[in-house]
Length: 359
Ligand code: AOF
Ligand code: ZN
Image (tube, rainbow, N blue to C red; front, side):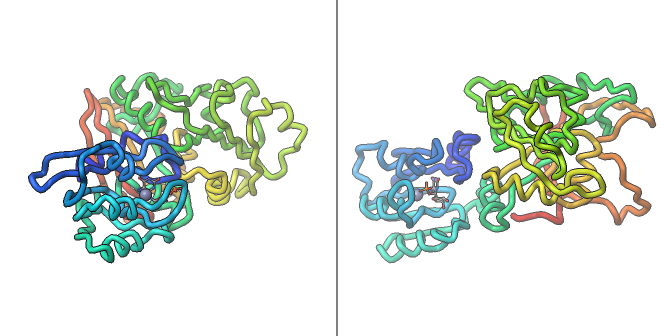
């Protein structure tokens, strides 16, 4: 199953809104006969790729896959049918498919054909792998992650705005990998004005995510780097923003008008509108105010914090979340840590916000 998960990850950034799936076929002595993964949206599923890659007679063999094989005619015929047709005798699946047209039906079909089926191997890891897909099918919402890079004392910049660089180059490479994985990166007009980031993915063979800018009154310069046309760009603006002002921007930008709340974009509504654009996962790369608003409204599922072994210690420097008035520890936003990774000199901490946990 770990091998399946590893294979599945090769499809990151390429298969959305479909799941990440890997499949391995093996014999009774656990020799691997073939393997495959879902490589690209709309193309063959993992099981089909693994099966079609080999000329070996698969009768009596076993297949392991991190998601229940499908039972429906979609862009390709059902994987369950192909497994049956090839005479495979055992199927091991990591988890059931949350997609209602499949959920349980794939397993049923296989069992009815006399195949030995086992479900739920490394289930938590399989769910973690496909958390965007689960969020989509279970809650009909985009999966939201806040990414930040801080000192040990939680600072993202000095009071004069100096922030280059808090984390080292290995951490910054991880950020590029994240950009390759999420459907979209979201930031604020404030960050665009202050840092003029490009928010592209600069990995070799990487792909650019959709870039989303929240710009209540359209104050970002029309020639900001983020507006350069090599990926889809969405600007969420206030419902009263005049069309005349929108027309000043490059016309490849998609504008979405959104209700305001206390003078700013209503984040709950913005996230719903973004989901309607087909975006299933959002990586927030912004500053302390937007981070705070996402926490306040409990709209974030996940936090990825790169922590550098530096202490700034200045009271006026900028925290990665700012603006709460809280008096009790019981008022904190709590996280369940899902992983910690030591990078060169930094730590990458990943956690789910407890309130929004779907796994
Ligand atoms: C995948 N890749 O390896 C598996 C999937 O639109 P379709 O026809 O490609 O079907 C997508 C559905 O198929 C998806 O929502 C999931 O329920 C099921 N399994 N999908 O894209 C795969 N095994
Ligand atoms: Zn399938």
